[in-house]
Length: 331
Image 1 (cartoon, rainbow, N blue to C red):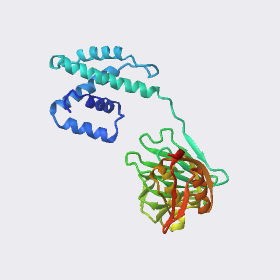
Image 2: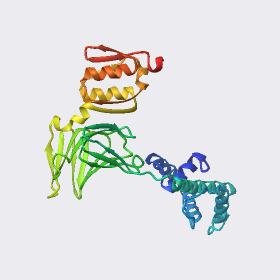
Image 3: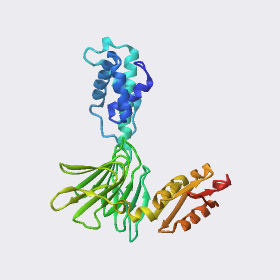
Image 4: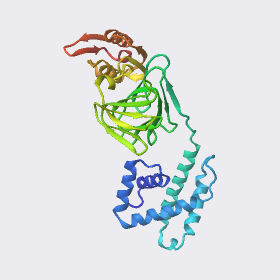
């Protein structure tokens, strides 16, 4: 990309406002390192951006981009010793970048604030799928509150009680569960957190991947089959040899809640919960959307209900079951 490439201008504007992704930030760093004049261009942009933003009111109205552009031009011309060195093409491009950054700030400020979302299990266990694709299985009388900014820069939540988590991998957005004084951080894995069985302690057990458990200056890195116990009164954090039963709770095995969930995702969750191999013979079936609740059903009955939803046939295979049919709506 050259000095006046529109794509790099957009990246620089996002970089100025702090809204660039890790990949975009890396692209900006790489672009700046390739030529000295690029670093000079960016430093002048930063100066322009800071000067243009001075005295702006709170972002509660539409952006007047033409007025902003004129203000940017005036600021640029007043820059100490800069005007003589810059071409018209430069300051027009620089002004456009600064206006783009200003517009981003206004737009961000005008975005409606999101409230925390709470998922609660009543007198029975509850399984749900979060907006990032992660699956949670809450024990009865347990609750999970998602942060207002969930799935922006991180996936943070607070847990009361016990839950099993099957985390969708996303290295750019850590998955963080707060349980009283304890914090559990993962990227993509499956684990269980229990503060319901004994409120004086918090037990974390891992099924897949790695989990970092921390409290203050104490931390443990857990691998599959391992666990940790946090004693709330003493603050002690100690390793625990987890058993398979500890890492796969009943809520993760038998309760399902699907809301317009693709059938291939449904089948994957059923396979994991029942340790069975169910396949879709027609690949188009995987796109069918299922909305249903299933509570602790035998596998055969569960398959019948799923098959009836899409007029599918069930065939027992050597390794499990196969579902077949024309697809959604007869397609």
